[in-house]
Length: 138
Ligand code: THU
Image (cartoon, rainbow, N blue to C red; front, side, top):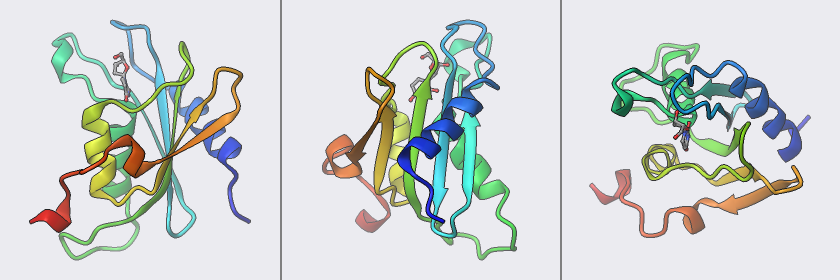
C-alpha cells in the first residue's frame, strides 16, 4: 500500500530522535521514499568543527546509495519520489540549499514538511530549487 505524506513525516520525525546535534540542539530527520517503495531515513550529524555537520537529508541520501541491496553499476541513479523533513524544534523545516542540490541529483519530485499545525505540506521540487543544475546539464 502506498505510504501517505503523513506517514512519511512520521518516519522523518522518528529519525530526528537519532540526531547527533549537541551544538545546535536542533534535531532534524529526513525520510526518502524510493521508487521501489523503500523508505530510507537519516538525521543530522554535527561535529565540533561546526562546518563539517551533515544534514539529515544528506545522511539519508548517502545511506540510500550505500545500502542498496544489489550491486549496481557505478553511476546508476535511484529516484526519490518524495522527501519528508522534520525539525523537532521548528515547523516547517525546509531543506537547506546544499540538501536541495543533493536531493535534486536523485530527481526528487517533491518535499514534504510539517505545516505549523503539524499537517503535511507538499512542495514541488521545482518550486524549491528552480533552474537547478543537475546531471542533465552535463
Ligand atoms: N539541518 C538539517 O539537518 N537539514 C537542513 O536542511 C537544515 C539544517 C541541521 C544542520 C544542523 O545540525 C542543524 O540543523 C542546525 O542548522
